[in-house]
Length: 336
Image (cartoon, rainbow, N blue to C red; front, side, top):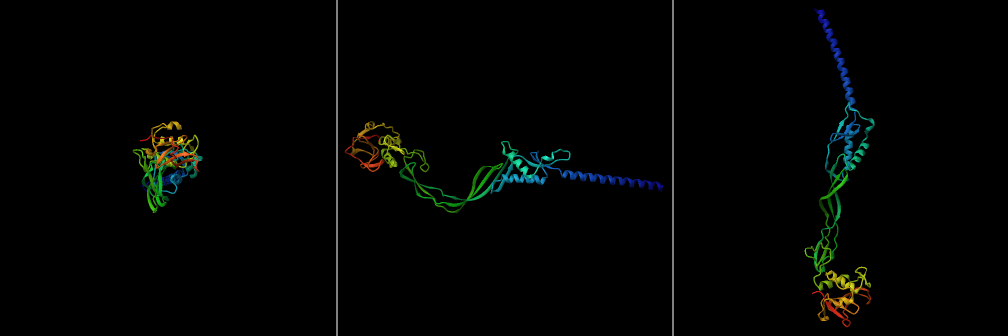
C-alpha cells in the first residue's frame, strides 16, 4: 500500500513539472507575441479606414497635432476645431500583412495628409476658428451736415478726421488651412480720434435718395439751379467744336451740356439756339436763360452776369463775364 502511494506521488510530481514547463513555454511565447505586437506599426485612420502607416501611436498623434497646428490661423488663439470625419489610430495585427517601406516618418506623413487635403476631394475637412487681437488705426464715424447751397453729389470737408487707435478682436476661420472668413467680434478704443465733418449738398437731390450717400448728378428744377450748376465748371478749357467739359468745349456745347443736365435737348448751332423757347428782354431775363450774340451764346446768371465758354479776356475757357448788352441779338427763355 505504501509503495503504491509513493509511486502515485512520483507520477503527480512529474505531471506538475510538465505543466510548469508548458506554462513557462506558453508564457514565453505569449510574451514574445506581445512584444512582436507592440512593435507593429500603427495606421492613421479616417472613419475607420487605414490611410497611412507610422512607426507607433505616439508618432501618429504627433502627425495629427502637427497637421492641425499648420491649419490654425497664424498668431491666433484656438477657439474651436472640428473635423467632418473621425480620425483615429489602429495597430496592425500580427496576422495582417504590411509593407515595411510604406511606414512613413512624421514629416512624410504630415506632407502626405496636407497634399491629400489640398485637392478637390480631401480625405477630411478640418474647420478651425481662432481669435487674434490687433491694434490698428481707425477714423471715427463721419459726421455729415447739410448744405442747401451745394448740389446733390457735391461734398465739402469742414474738419479733417484724425486717426485714433483701437484693439480689435478678429475671429478667423480656416478650412484645411485656407482662410474662409474673418470677422471683427470686439473692439476697444485705446486712443480717441477726431471725427471728420463733411458737408453734403442737397440742391437737386433726386426723390428717394439719401443726401449723405448720393454721388450722382443733381436733378435741376429751375433755371436758377441750372445757372448755379454751370458755375461748377468754371475753368474748364475752351476748344472750338469741343464737347468735353474736361478736355475742351465751345460756347454752344457748353450751353447744350448744361441744359442736358436738366433733361432738355437743344439745337447744335447758334441759329438753332436763337429760336428756342420764347424771346425776353434783358430786364425780364431770368437765371438760366440763353443769351445769344451773333456768333456766341451764354447762360444768364442774373444781375447782368453770364457764364460761358469763351476765348479772350486773359483766359480761354468757362468763365463769368458781364453781359455785353450792346451786342445781344436775343435772349431765350426755355425753363419756366
